[in-house]
Amino acid sequence: METFFLLCAAVLILCIFSNKISNKLGVPSLLIFMLLGMLFGSDGIFKIDFADFAVAEDICTAALVFIMFYGGYSTNWKHARPAAPRALLLSTVGVIMTAGLVSLCCHFLLKFPFAESFLIGSVVSCTDAAAVFSIFRSKNLNLAGDLAPLLEIESGSNDPVAYMLTVIALTIMEGKAVSSLGVVIILELSVGIAVGVLVGIIAPRIIRKFRFYAGGFDSIFMIAVAMVSYALAVVLDGNGFLSVYLTGIIMGNTKMKNKADIIHFLDNITTLAQMAAFFLLGLLSFPSQMIGFLPNTLIIILFLTLVARPLAVFLLTGKKYSIREKIFISWAGLRGASSIIFAIFATVSGIYKGEYVFHIVFGLAILSVAVQGTLLPAVAEKLNLIDNNNDVLTTFNDYQDDASMNLMQIHINEGHGWQNQLIRDVNLPEGSLAMLIRRQDETIIPKGDTRILAGDEVVLNVPAYESVNDIELREITIDKDHPWNGCRIEDLDLEDHVLVAMIKREDRNIIPKGQTKIQEGDVVVVYN
Image (cartoon, rainbow, N blue to C red; front, side):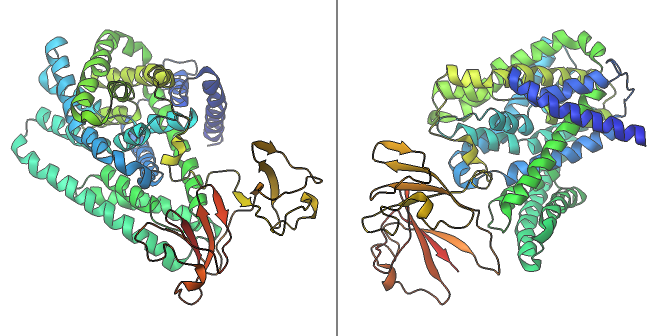
């Protein structure tokens, strides 16, 4: 046991340090994790003999459950919703089209039997959420328009369809009647959706009712929620991957206390799951055997990347996206852990008796992450699709909570209590720091003897707000039809124990008085 612990610790430390190397080289860290696994494996330096596909499937499935749950939980639906229709079209019809086209390539070009061709097409038809999320975050890839949410939703939601296609392929290979699969597919989808939505609605209510967010128990509760969502759907013959993804989206976009800590916890768990899954997949591989399948692998990935994926993208994204955007969407269809896990599922099913599917799919995933993943930022820049006015992190729910600073901007009006005061003489909130002063076209880094003048914008770094005693802050956006539009604070008919704490107006935060008038476009922060 001690040797096992030392080995696990060594692997984790190597994965952590290799992440630094991957950032310098511009290579996705997930590829490094996989290569480390190959280094430890039977054909590597350390010669660890591991060929238990069943154990690998269980561990990688568990990792994929948490990756998909976090993918849903971290998706900011408000920012992602405009891209959702096209993304869901790609993750359903697009996956089916890709599987069909790759199957035709394997059958007619490579002369594989039809059943095996369809199996290969099925397992490589989905893009990999772990790879897409990881590259977008680590490279801070600020894409124009809604390209980022489109690709995030697609990669996070297409695994269930690819899984069902894999089941259909195995059913065909087993010789069972395909006519009954329609009912099975409808049942899987219906149960997966129902369980995912049900768990996603009930779980936040449990957290609010029992208030066990103190001590981090709410974060641990999230692990149980992901497990329940997946397992309950599978037990009821539903699609567990679809269920856990829907649960993540619903919970991630529901108002809950302590969300920042929950997201940081899930981020760490998912990072560990990615390390474990990609390392284990590398450990399971046999590079010496993959070399023999390399010509077929190259043909399939070239067809997939240059023909099948672009054809699906160009047909399904319509006129909303330009030619340049469609080319980028096509290139961003990364294959990774999901495809390999589905290939393992086929191998341990007992139905498929061959071995080349796993080796082909594994080699294809390595090439996809290595080439497409590494070149993704360069392709985006070459196609002029980088927009630094967009922040890719805003498409994730932890954008606000993940910031290392909580900034507050105060406008100094004529007669303000801070006017003509030195920074050191101003009574700042405890734990706050004056970061900078904007004065007309000048930006000043303040010191203790810096004097504040009328018209200045003072930016403070203030401690994060923590809710206690059930006190909550909520935001109300004022549109032209809102009853508060044009009203003064003193004229509002507010409930007992309700106070307007702040008004966000364009780039200013206003501490309201009774005479302050609310305007269209304001965001009114209400204190309960």
